Length: 217
Image (cartoon, rainbow, N blue to C red; front, side, top):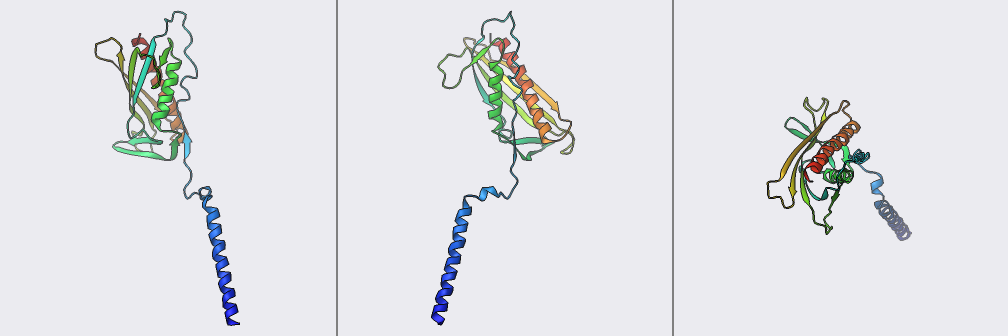
């Protein structure tokens, strides 16, 4: 009798272990449904670029030519996190992310800006076989949210770009341009900060495109 009871107890214990193991395996693929931290909200910028093309000008000349662009982006800002700065301190906004690295979103916005330029400039991609009439080096020097009065103050989105234009058959030094846009954010909220990036990016790219069109002829 004792042996039978012992065997029965062992059988129940084995079944209990098997049930726990099966439950653990079934939940293994579902663990992401119950994250330990709150998911980050995703944002984007550049939506204002290229939405309203420059009105056609009857006096416009023929297309300027074909342009190849290279990009540089500050390392601290070239992330999916949104960079902020107060004095000598840097920080990223908690719980907020760009949908892609900032450099990728900026490049996409830049290409849309040039696609709607007037006169038009055809952009050459890496796989294109065309010969560029000019090469533009676009250096994004600043892409951040500044808090001049500390983290609790009203921030300003700052986008600063330096360009170098190399023209084919021009042996002179490259032409250099500097462009900046500062957008004050009245309400210190993520949505308002993102809107500031959207506006500042559109402003800087509008300046850079107009400058490029004027000097790449």
